Image (cartoon, rainbow, N blue to C red):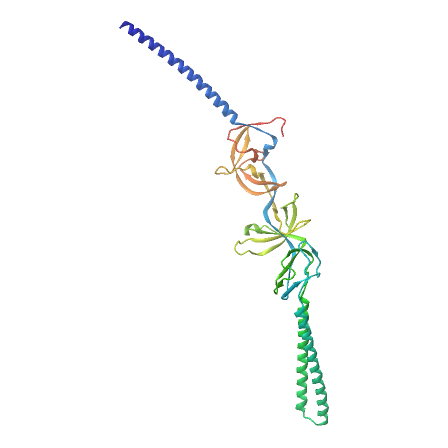
Length: 376
């Protein structure tokens, strides 16, 4: 019994020593993990910035603009249509060819029209002969009346016959002019100078009256047709200028408002605004353009638009205060441009406040920021 008690006592002592060692090791491991977590947190809550990552809120004169877009169109364009029905002949021009106003472009078969002209001429000659006959009959009857051989009634009948013959002759002359006009309409002429944009019929085809044969566009004067909302259109005035970016052009093109449609477009309720391009260059009809229309100026405390973040319920900016990031709620106002940069009016921060640009991304509030030495 005494021996068993000694063994039990020894086991208890060993167990206590083992527990102490285990607690010491566990405490050391916990301290190491806490230190690692603290170091990771410190690394996570620090950021290195270059000079271009920080901007200041400034009182600026903003250029207010409206976004616009649309297709480029020629101010002058026209379709060449067939004025008479028949077989199309001699159409040689194709897309891209340059034509002059009045140039003959083709012809519709004129056989029937020439026959009608001849028919009308013959009818006019016949009517002229009837006028001559009626005139001679009147002259004879006037002589006979003066001699008392016929009555005054017979003379009146001769006068009426002459008037009827003259009316028929004038009608025949008008018919002749109409037939000549129809013959002239068989010739297709360019109504304006420009370039062929579409060839809608081929030589040998039979075309109907008013069938479209060619489209001509004059690229010397181009304009943008832009649709604006009713509220935005109130700010637009004749003479305001816009900067447009067109497909295939590296440099923007300047345009000026020349017309404003007085009525809204049915359905969309938008207003069409027409801007003349000041330097069309080698542009083509149908190119898509987008840009901004300057409508006025406003003085305001403004920041670049990308500094205002919206990933929280209220818009905010990432402000640098005492070397740390502070999320500052702001109220936005008028938007505009300054030196080509999109800006927005803000309230809730002082002038000169240092803000992080949008390219930096979202940083946790309280993040320590450092300025990179020797970097711009």
